[in-house]
Picture 1 (cartoon, rainbow over the protein chains, first blue to last red):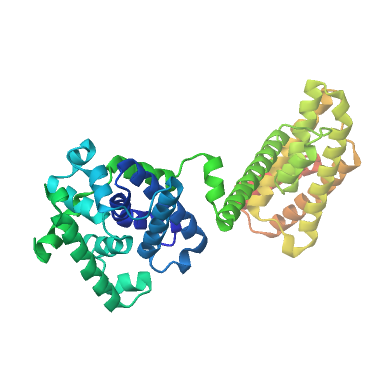
Picture 2: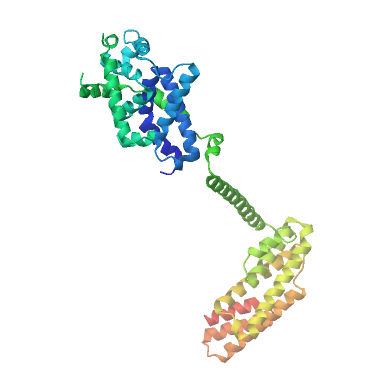
Length: 172
Length: 243
């Protein structure tokens, strides 16, 4: 399979759900998630056409574009990169979001909302490791940090997540 | 909620999936499927593909040119078969016809008769000239066969010559009735002389051979025809003895 288009087509099929989910969990909007995810793959395809041989890990490459795209999105909108748990509860409350009601049950929505209340770096690590089944070593490589640091960050992320979930406003 | 329950809850987020129609739409926009529009195809082709395309296109153009050339040549050769001396493509006809000098001479005599019958006055001179040349060629070929052992005619060839000469003489008579007398030309006399020598040789050979009564009778008739300068008839009579 020497055709870059065919190669990227397979990459697209492999990563579209993961990148979408990654973006969706950060922006909490189907419309924005779709818009940003399509831009991620468009940019990825442009880069792949020009430097396909030098992209050794397409997944990490796409996640990096997605991270930057989310940052740019919040920068353009004048929003902070991290959303406070309280604010996240307001915008993602299952009782006020009809879209969320349709696609997610209450338990999932609690977790989703809680993740959005975490620090950005904890979000990334938790999503990659538990949702995308990315090994610690690969996350460490992607972020350029030691695996031990990633384990510590993952542990702290889970602890913060647990704290957010156990807050009375989220569980009530 | 303990850590295990928390992790299981996190994994439930895998249910978050994009809309399938959106996935397909974005893919088709980023990686459009090939269409048969040249405008869409060409920018995606690399140099080698373009080169191949041009090569195929060039070969196709060459093939068309070759086919046209073949068509023209075949048409020209086909048309040339209906030409007569004096026509533009008559030389093409001469290229394609038999190499047997007696067959050629017969063809020229036929054409001469045809021209006279159709009253193609502008072609007569050419036809007469062509006829004379062909008769001269036939005479030379016959003389050559008489003088050179290697070129000696076989019995079948002699039969064919006799038949052709008779047909040529018939056409000469027709031409004469149509107003052109070619029997007294140098070329016709040249052929008569060659035939005379051929018949004389054959008679001499037969006189030395042991013949049956009927063969001797046929030889006598051949001698009579020879003396009347009816060489082709004499030759036919001789060939009947030889068979």
